[in-house]
View 1: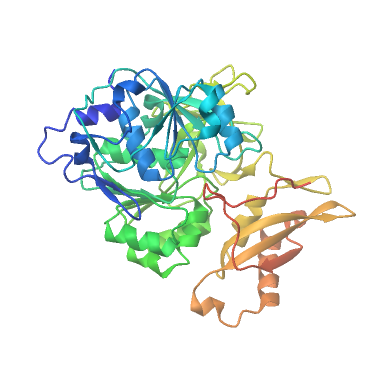
View 2: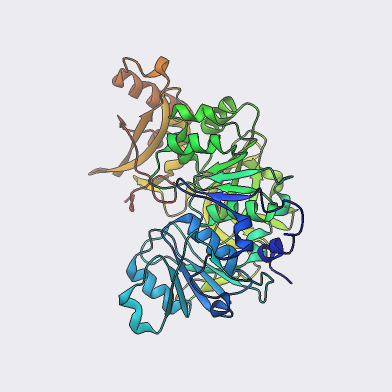
Length: 468
């Protein structure tokens, strides 16, 4: 079966198909028609045939072009995240049995490994005739996120990665996709693949680019699909540039999408389809919800929807799906699936009024006198306050009960809500709203107003490593 990406090149005879398509970042716009003249790889593509290739480039644009050319050629693509350490890179090279490294610069420390190092040309095309027909079914090795220590590596086939794209709605060649995510992570890679295979173009973000600048650039390029984590969106809505874009589709994933952020996005983008999705590197894309409500219908449990089955066991969501990764790579990893083929996401859900709502990770609870508090559950209540843009619940050690709950909040940019802020009044209002919605042990003992919250490279709130 030919690669979905490679099949794109088989349609180049269609008038203007590639001519109007592009990938761009903050400095360069690359028209895909340029690949008809040659390759951006620093060597003949035959050097990559049947090889296990590590891709470690400095820019998303260079990575996107390399992935586009290697699928169907390399036996395995190892996609490095931008923050992968040298130590973990060396380990990954051994684990994935890599034979070739594509990067922006040669790494002397790897010369003794026997690895062939090839310098990437980035968006520069090297003129040569290129056969774009897929010769093999490439494995995609992706790094998991949210782990401590060395990240795990999971193996996907392109068929797994793209299985959800057919259910993503009608796309057209005029679509311009974009995401706050980095495409070297699962969430961003999904959007890149949707753009490439769906026939659209892609505007790439940058970790160093201010949110306002990125949004202005997205508006100038006519972005029609924009995705990110709830944290990405909360930060974006603080920028006046958020009003400059008018995407047809707004998508959230990667964190709990509470009702407050969904309502804010629907109010800001009145003519957009606002949806939130659940996906993970291991389980793949499980579902999208576009009814404007947090959580997902309880009726979805036990059903097969587009081949995806959901199950709740011991309070955690489990998924069986053709979109799931094939396996973990390495001998010291846990089994990816149970005996029935389900992946335990370790994301906790609770049934309320006919819907399952996410309340956090199984390993992220705060212990308050032997009772469990899920930070995301408390944040959902805090974020409802009209003066709160985003919040982060923390544990504060208590000599009596082990820990108590505290919360840091970032205020929104609405002048009507921020002028003359009375912190004590704000604290009292937030605590009162929590008392009305949850058990006393979950109610924050203190509220602190902060200018910003720390966000990871994956666009998620950085939470304390231990909630004792």
